[in-house]
Length: 216
Length: 89
Image (cartoon, one colour):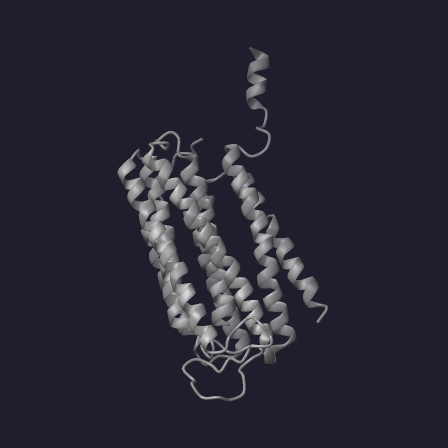
């Protein structure tokens, strides 16, 4: 009896959360360093070569991307509502909110694809040879704004983020498929929770990226 | 499996604050302030938004403190990585 009581007072080793969730957190922390490498390179190169970059709104379409940021923030709300729904055992709510998140995530990637197409048409490309950004709505020829470092770092940062969103949308489809099979309940919702952690992390990274790449 | 029971966090309120901060950021970015002040203000707002997402949407606020430590672990490493490399330029 005494031994049992003593055992109860012992600290719980590690972090008292289930393994799947801990694994996702550790993965996300490695992702922090991955994106630090990308965003950090952009910051360092911008400090080192300010002439290669441009002020906000000169080359990039800030209003469009601000709207896209709003879309991604909305998708975080729908994702967290899906999680809240399954916590209450609401299967219909789970599927509905997951579908809304998939729609918003796909919309975000679609807008990003349109943005890339327009930027490339204006000469803002990631390759040094073809780089000749003239700025937004400037159809006339003239000296290029910024330099190839701007295009390369911009497309690497936002492209990797877009790839993360795309992978997230695919994982959301998988989560929705499992939800239609009734795999999640009010007592077993780990898959939805870790999906949400990934999705919110992608949103969090975009919040930082949007500020660094588009506004500063 | 389940995390500690708690009242549903104010998801919609947080969404509203995130939206307001995004609009404020865009307006602030085009104001006539010194570049350093603009950058500082924008980074503060971005960190504020990121914290709201981490605390409420990722539920970090309701998680054990040991997970907070784990989540914060790469942040000093990230700062060191950028600051050390920037010395080279």
